[in-house]
Length: 313
Ligand SMILES: [Mn+2]
Image (cartoon, rainbow, N blue to C red; front, side, top):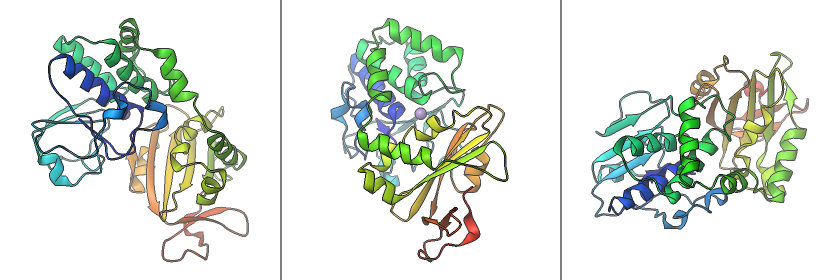
């Protein structure tokens, strides 16, 4: 059971949820991720059972919540160790290089919602443990039912998982209300630095530098959820958060403020991707503030002199 690197609530929840379901069927699944499970989802039963490699005696690989084969962060040969089942709700472009049983549903709120549908369709018993894991995936990928990816099926699945014993209160507390002081300070810097675009009304942007992250004692993972929080301004069309990752890479998080605004094209133009309402990209360079106090991304070759080529706002 392979999920993407830097796993989010849906990656962890759908992987552990399907693992719990398969265990009740007498199977022996191994959850796998090359990065550690984040603090928010460590309360899930089985979160300490993730391995970082694909075992050699694997007879089936199930890949979950991965928009591409690169997302697990594995060598391509690892995914060919066994027949591949690919369950995902991200839009896929192009034909994947490795043959597989593909189960794609871009209408689903989350991969966890898809796993729930598969379990119901197959008549599998959904125990309390699986229910909590799957509801975690749904709740985190919908930002607690706030995003436009919520459908009647999402709420019906969630209601049924609740009925089956999913620990909803615990999910909300761990996933949304477990911030360190360092994280709150970092979010404070991003909020104080927010700027309205002088050219395009309704577009907000802000930046976080590697120094901000280091000085607050936060980690780059602490920016998870920040872009969603910042898009709450009435009348907002789009919001851009740029984070300097110190590895010479700037991460861009784009959020649409209205359902009829599609920001995925901009993310794709910059080499990234995502959904119409939430997308992202990464570009090489460092964030630097110019003398007129605007922020620019300096290309990697010229890190000391700001260039006007890539104005942020
Ligand atoms: Mn997902």
